[in-house]
Amino acid sequence: MSTLEKPTGEPTTGGHHNRWLVLAIVCFGQLMVILDATIVNVALPAIQTDLNLSPEGLQWIVNGYTLAFGGFLLLGGRLGDIYGRRTIFIAGVAVFTIASLLNGLAQSEAQLVGARALQGLGGALLSPAALSIITTEFQGPDRAKAMSVWGAIAGLGAALGLLLGGVLVKFTSWEWIFFVNVPVGVLVIAAAVSQIRESRAEDAPALDVVGAITATGGLVALVFGITQTESEGWGSSIVLISLGIAALLLVTFFAVERRHRDPLVPLGIFRVRSVSAANSVGLLAFAAIFPFFFFLSLFLQQVLQYDALKTGFAFLPFSVAIILTATVASQAVPKWGVRRSAMIGTGAAFIGMLGFGLLLDADLNYFPGVFIPMVFLAIGMGMTFVPLTFLATSKVPSSEAGLASGLFNTTQQIGGAIGLAILATLASDRYASTLADKATSAGVAVPESQAALASAPPEVQALVAQSLVDGWSLAFLVGAGLIVLGFIAGLILIHDEDADLDAAPAHIG
Image (cartoon, rainbow, N blue to C red):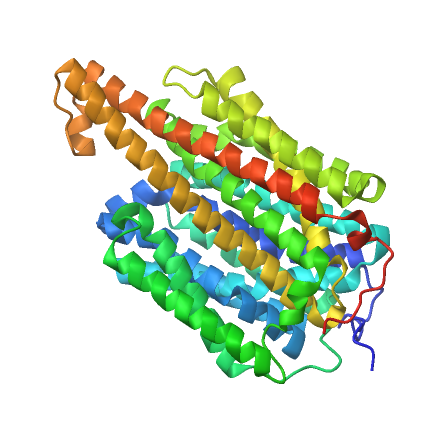
């Protein structure tokens, strides 16, 4: 029996099936996930004040989400192949929506962190299911157009999250950054039930329980260890133990998968050149570019003294640029090929990251110092992630679409977590050493608390601001170096024949 199956059944309304409406529905679901990854950042000070959170608790509002999302992505993707992509997509949106409501109603640190983890689980179910729905609905040149829209969601959602978060915190309260997901989630579920056809692997395997436990446990331990490096350091016991557990579980996972009849992840998928190329280049690109939102939002608020609303609006050019780039990418991928498109994208991203690394200064003007590098980064994200997303799934049979989607989403999360951990550690170390040298040279004492720093003399505040900038500049320069590695990897690994728009997928053995 062929492994290339088509979506089965008609929409429950019985009307004409519209693939582009399906694309809009799944992209709205994905947009909820991406928005929530950044919308929380601008609300953290308000949440901390209202719930009287500790610094560790505040960090876990972010890490709890990342931990569950990154840990369950592979399992979420495979569940779609086995039980149906529409079913798992709807289940994911439902879990995400319920968790959003619980977040808004939270009255304590434990309730909020728990609900954030539940949100991450919902995202891990819906995100790979959404991407695999696209790969089964679209073929040929239309798939490239659909992937350009999907690729734009990542950058657009991240930037809009900062803007929407600033608006909601400014004019309502922090709870509404979560409540806003509830009506959107209900509408997405209703539209998915009526418009999306079910699809699953024809010869659906049984769920690999041991593989699911070891893969999920290993990824959760890996993400947990990485998220602790900024506060605890790479050599701390909690980080080393977490990474050791991750290594043990992941080695066990690969050993089990080699012998399992119906593995959670058929290891043959890594022999598909398009899959290995997209994930290898993507890992480096995600590690370099995703921390940009974190560092730039801190620079705008802590150095340029923007409030949450102004910070959100400062990212608007990024949103506009990535929308326009997605339109160009939908035409570029079929005409130029994935290799040339990805090379243009990583080149533009390099210019943007290098620009921030060289230009960042405590007295930097928004235009052109922030605006121009930001636009280059937006172009780079669109022209990199669109062809990589297409490449990651274009040679994969529909029976493994959820697996490939989950794998590529996992690469994004793990790459982003690793990149942020490394770059944030470098920035923190550079900040501490620079500030100590400057304070010693100036013969001044620097207050340790933020409250005391706010009332410190202007010259002390200037020393702190410039030291922060020195740390972030280093992070951007190292990020530019990672993009160079991604560019080189793309030149070596990406081949246009691996992403023939009209090629029929081959079975993964």
